Image 1 (cartoon, each protein chain N blue to C red):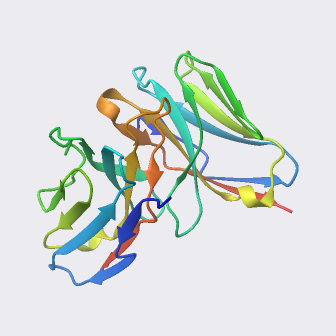
Image 2 (image 1 turned 180 degrees about the vertical axis):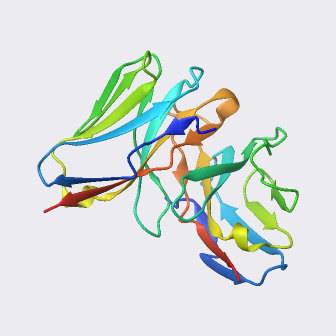
Length: 115
Length: 111
């Protein structure tokens, strides 16, 4: 079956512009996560959606970052007024409802470059 | 405040030998630990996990050991193969389904 998909795969934008990154999780997965990985760094948690519950936004680095998840499926991460330090790979992951092991299924990521 | 640490940024091992990747954590409330493997330009893929109530889990060439008193876990790969060359991330599940990832260890298996 289809895995987690993300678009675009690469995005180059000018400083100050807004960008939208999209994540299509695996169908039926109720939990969805956004992470970012800066060059040479580990995965930094950004935001987590679980079903219809209020999202955990504790990892968002500033109020320029926001995310939504429509209909419990597709999610969009929006970065307003991008800065050069926003350059990173943005990864989305989902987890199925059932299953003992909390294994995350990751998408291929969106590489964002802010010039 | 790094709750999950992987103190070796890189590791080189000869093909056929054992690879040992280490991970230390500080939060005793973590209840599940997972290892992911990441190739360049791809997302991480799940490798193996262990519950905090166990001390060992084995899956083929991969074994994860957990020492709760030392807050330490390790991933053993035996025998190592060139295709195992990748970045390995240790992750821990905390309160409310939050996951904390370590910075990763780049493993190179030399033929």
